[in-house]
Length: 149
Image (cartoon, rainbow, N blue to C red):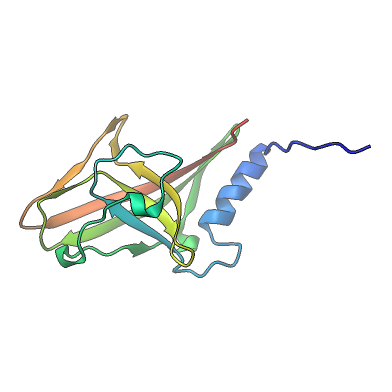
């Protein structure tokens, strides 16, 4: 007799999965996970690829940032959910005239998009307009890993 076992993560499993990704426990290089900013007003979707997003130009002072796995901090674990935070990151733009709508997390070595999202202030989208003369943009990042039944 042959049967199929359908796995469902436990609360501890959800926590483990987030820790493995964010803290690079799987042996990823410290510089492999990066965060980038999005300037195209796009509705984020599960089918998105890295090429879906437009980033600010390098000439504006923009650069992707490395995310050090040891810097993620678990802030809560609820039933079926694990939440982690990353300290505030700052970008110093020398020129602007564009709007930042969100950010994406990707594996630089493989070129794979891991996650993306819009900037929010509470419960509504909150894009940030970079002044034409440039300016400072800051954001923290929160990762929520849910157990999807």
